[in-house]
Image (cartoon, helix red, strand yellow):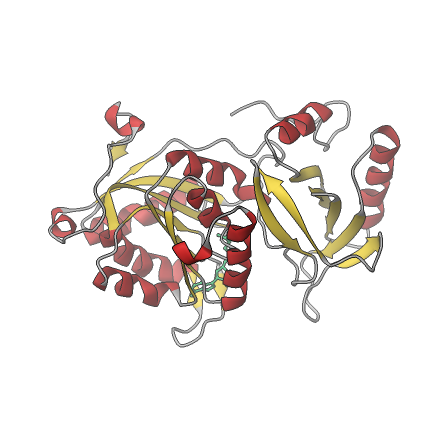
Length: 340
Ligand SMILES: C[S@@+](CC[C@H](N)C(=O)[O-])C[C@H]1O[C@@H](n2cnc3c(N)ncnc32)[C@H](O)[C@@H]1O
C-alpha cells in the first residue's frame, strides 16, 4: 500500500505535492478533502461538496474557507450534493458562481477528457474512485473490451485510447450518448465502437451467438436497479448467472474486472462468489494482486474490486473465436498467479 498523500499539516486534505503530481499527470479531477461528514471534489475548475447532514455542511464549508485562505484553488463554481436524499429526485445545487454558466464542464484524468454535468441527477457522470482500475485497463492494452454497465463509458474511453475495440452496454441510451461524447472529446470515433442500449443479461447470449470474444471485460453493476423487459437487476441474485454466461466470451487469459459497492461484499467475498460460479461454469480463474487504492481516497472507501485472469475450459475453447489469443500476461508467465 503506498503512503497516503493526504496532507499531514491539514488533516483530510490532499497535499499540494499530490495536487502538483495530479497536474503533471494530466489529471484535473480528484478528491480534495475527506471528512466524517462528507467530502469535497475538484472537478476541473468547479468544486462539488458532498454532505450527509445539516450538522456537517457548515464544518465542510469552514474547512473549505480555511483552505482557500491558505492556498489558491481554481474555483469557478461550488456545487452541493446532499447524500442519501430520499425525497424527490436527487440533484446538485449551485452554492456559488455564475448561474448563467452552462451546467456542464470537462475535466481530465491521465490526459483523457470527460464531460461532467451538474444537471443530470446526483452524479456528474464520472466515478473518481475507479481511477486506478481505468489506468490498469489502459496499460493492459486489450484488443477487445466488453464494458458492461458502462454508464458514461469511462472504461471504454480508457481502453479505446490504448487501441482497443470497445463494446459498451448499458440499459440507458441517454448515458451511452454521453459516452459517445466522451469518445469524441478524446478524438475517438464512436462509429468505430459499439454502444448497446440493452440489458447486460440479455446481451451476453447475443454476443456469444455472434461469436464475439473479448480479452478484457469490465463488470461494474449496480447493487440494485429497475430494469425493463429483463426485470430488476439485483447483484446478489444475478451476478452468478451473468458470470456463467460471460466466461465463454473470454479469450484465453482474458482480464476481467469485477467491481461493486454492495457493502457486504469485500474483494475476498467477491472472489469466493466468482470462484463458485466459475467452478460451476467449468472455467478457471486467477486472482491478480490488488491495485493500490487511489491516493486521494481514505482507507475503507471506494468500491470493492477484483481483477481476474480467465482461462476458459476446454468446453469453451472448442468454440471458434474471431480474435487471436494474446501473449500471456507477465504475472502469468512468472507464475505469480494462483488458479482456482
Ligand atoms: C455503477 S454504474 C456503472 C459505472 C461505470 N462502470 C463507470 O465506472 O463509469 C451502473 C450502470 O448500470 C446501468 N444498468 C442498470 N441495470 C442494468 C442492466 N440490467 N443492464 C445494463 N445496464 C444496467 C445503469 O444505467 C448505470 O449506468
